Image 1 (cartoon, one colour):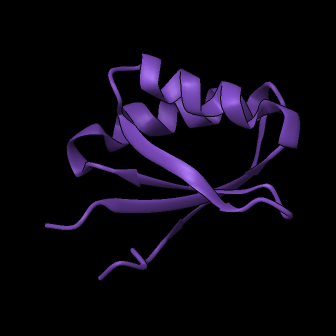
Image 2 (cartoon, rainbow, N blue to C red):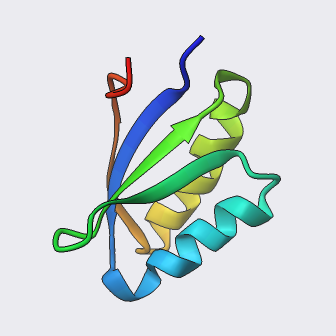
Length: 77
């Protein structure tokens, strides 16, 4: 079984905060920077934690920390 895969953009200065939030939320997602020049982030999410991940990601989007959250085909398949 592969993880769900999401990408999003963030404010460069808030990347550390976003990853910290997900670590604090019981590690619902593994995240890393995909393209630092574009502030493009990627997240690998267990299907069991997807609903919780989306709740947190949508909250961060509403607060202006995360932009253009998109589910994509897992690039590691």
